[in-house]
Length: 363
Ligand SMILES: [Mn+2]
Image (cartoon, rainbow, N blue to C red):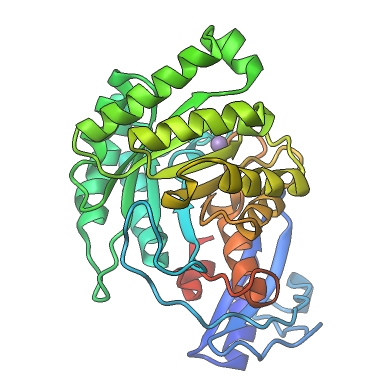
């Protein structure tokens, strides 16, 4: 990484207010942005003098940016956000990211990553999948106890979330992992596409609806007031069926509905309109948060995520550098900086609570 070059330029512009962004997308592509606190000092096409000599650094192409200065953080309420323009960032580096080909982290590394994600101010940390192994359960517990109890001066503490399939064993394990956090969340999922219901679950659509609502209600019955439900493979599910299952899980107590494009199959226009239709059509959707989760198989994870936000998604699931299953997930840096740089123009003033000054340190 040629971050030396970036830091140098950054210092030249403004030591204190400058936030430096070095983005490595899932494909290794670099997006070059330098942000400042007031965010006007962006020079196009400037080349740096690099501490390692010019040949070591091709120099960035800087882009002009008119960042939103809005970054106030709101008090966390599981099923609603007091400002319609605030977008929650759900960091699943430790869960989806850990499913990257070849990735495997120790508990200590997971704790370090969680601390660092909290430093950036992510709203929710998906700390793992506790039923998948005793080690993962221990790691989630450790993160819940430490990071999930570390309250900042401004009252910020991240929600700690654990993933589970729709069965009692998984949900018990997830709750055991996250319950020590000040704001614990259980995230439960079941497949809703025809192909997955028939061949993987071997269940009828009616059975799937019943299991999903029972398990959401079960998670709530454990004392967890924050339950996220995901209809897995939503991108390839029948939309009428999606409205029905989502209606039922809202009744059962789900507080966030996450819409995953599990196989990275949709186009931005399709994914955006799916989010818009779910918001407009599902009874009770106005009382919950709609979320996006986009895989990058067609290279569209960031584009789809932004389309989701544009159409009313107010929780965006991302990973550091877009790591994740197969081709990866939506990139935290790309999504956060797109909203920060273009939120005013394109999204009617959307903003996140992320402290972008720390982004370069995290990559
Ligand atoms: Mn995923």
